[in-house]
Image (cartoon, rainbow, N blue to C red):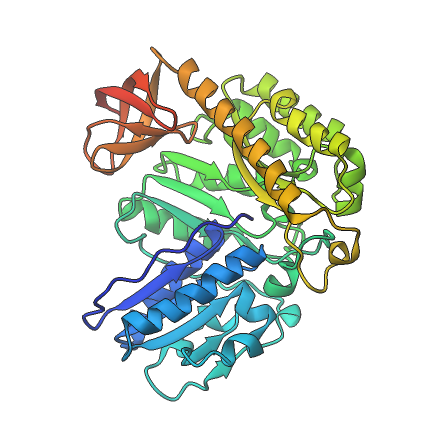
Length: 429
């Protein structure tokens, strides 16, 4: 899971419901579910803010957004929800700007968005959750790619992470519901589906027969042959199963882009994080996948300045970018989360954390430039997501003219520091 900036609400609601999303792809999916619930319930002139708790900075930005929403929309109903709210509902209930506080279970309940008659604070004990409801949606607003939730919650206890207390135990969506949702999305114009969850690679451990993630994906692709592109969100390296490795080798509709939950490249730091892999495991995974799918591109989450991290330990993480051939990085300076074991460990000074994060980001930017330059002259397929812009199979943004919602064959003719430039060759799907 990785945070992303929220989207500021519009200045005029005009009776509509605005949803402001912070955080991960799963939050983006759930925001779309909430948008539909609110509209179906007849809720009007409301702002729903969906929070992230991965870092203290994410929570700070969220609280700013809540205050800004009230300033911009003094007469609107302000509803807050998400992981930060689930973990500390009293804090957000105490904000005078807030009208309604919903937990992570309640935000997916249609009854929570009735215009009237809903208690101001409705937050259940997430640790008691045992089911993941199927939330069938027809598509994503103004999008040609969509996220689907296949798994929820996490049973691991990494020492830096508070998210299991915001999401509850691991639980999986049955295969039939996933297939039904993907069919509906494709029928409504979605060309690429991104499989997401809190701990996606734990998929199936709570279902009859304990199907693995790879088994589920294989059956999904067989059941929905009309789906052109399938992409995966963040994967735990040591949980990639044999079926998933085979799919990477044999299934062209599974995109050659894997994002790994690496977090660090030093063995001692990984042990203190209570991760279940070591540096050699990360290198073995990237090497094996490259043998199976030579054109694969890797992304990774990396934390800079974890407690006790020495300069040598940090250098091991920095070197991992080149040693493992990582390209798309999500880098965060370590952020203390109250109640986690890491928050009690000897801390690295915050300025040093920021400095190390800057070094990692610079390494990532250099890796992106190298990758983009390596694509010059090559042909690839691009899903056009908005006028003049799409993404290729490797997830790189591509400036190209083409019909929105179509997958087109292109030739790469140039690049900037952050995107490719292409000439269309013809429609694919």
